[in-house]
Image (cartoon, rainbow, N blue to C red):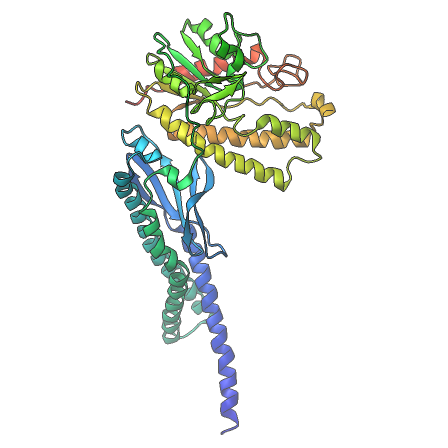
Length: 466
């Protein structure tokens, strides 16, 4: 008798350990599935709609959460404890008097009670649902295991009870730190910029822009809108010359075709922080922030925006691809994502300020044309092979997706110029060649094609929401 008892104990211990291992695997599977299928919780603040959910589990014990901004997953400035952290998705933005406070936090004390509290409540609801779905998932998996092993009913009930306890213990142990700490952190949030951050515009030290009566359409943006490399403006001002504004720019085409009074404020090398929201040093002078001048054109009913290429260093990216053996390496891809994240944050700030313009003009966001096309034979001597061009087009499409998503989220229009059949290596290109004054920028015909796209978008755009 004494010789068999230890043996029996040795046989039971591996079996007990095996079932414990099964329960742990089931717990991990149930938690992973629950984090995937638990519905995001909808919260409303300042007329805006935000979805609150959770990130995928990580191996780190602390780190930033995530926020989905115009289709880009960006890390939050806030850090959270635990391997699972809050994930926020901005899904709808509407005109509202509280929007500026929501984005920039003009009144932190009041906004914190609104934004922070609703985010915290959304996270608590999400975690409650995740806990329930985890339990249901564990019971479903263990029930299948019991049926497969044909366990007796009594043993099955014990297995389900043990599995439920182990699963929720693992779930609560892994996520409870975040579940308890996250609401407190979220309640301190008083603005969207506090969550994702953005580069503040440079302080405008220039004199206030003069009032511009009679203007119907304003164009703001970068060298594409300015008309880089084309004929200069007639009776050009110092700012026109410094910014490279052309009489062939699509702003002038719209003015001539529709008999509109169009004001072109676009400037070569303009970015959102330095050009649109803040002043820009150009040609030995300081050009006022374009948005400041837009606010002085109070009779304007339309604002057209072309921006993004200079924010992302598009010209430098093309030049690097031309000389590098491969422009799709990890370092270059990481740099592009970093630039894209920064642009997305600044784009949010630009859109929010456009939406709160006093007279609520209609806003049209221009996406970028494809300058390359399927035939890139003329670019090979410069080092731009088909593979490199495909990488550039992929990144250009990503930028355009951000531009379109941001416009849609704010209820703005969006236009996509079509240069098909007229790219770089075609008989009649709409793009300036490698030997042009501004390679890859539109020719006069390219500018006209952009004007046609804008005109069509403005015709089809629904009435402005008031």
